[in-house]
Length: 67
View 1 (spheres, rainbow, N blue to C red):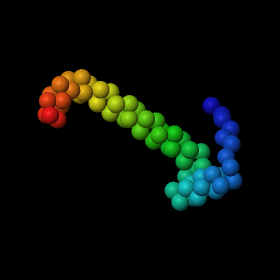
View 2: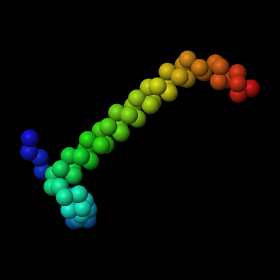
View 3: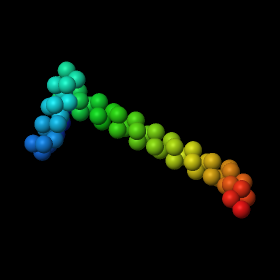
View 4: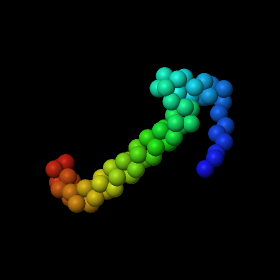
């Protein structure tokens, strides 16, 4: 799939610098950044889900311990 990415001059310079430093294309830098962000997003969702479950399961105990 082809996609056009509009960047400010400053962001393009950052992207270029990252690509040169890593020896990869600007496209590959963008793809990796998207994947890393998606992984963090999924991880944050999992943490929120586990936190909700823990609060439901241990909420009364935590309330008693807080007293």
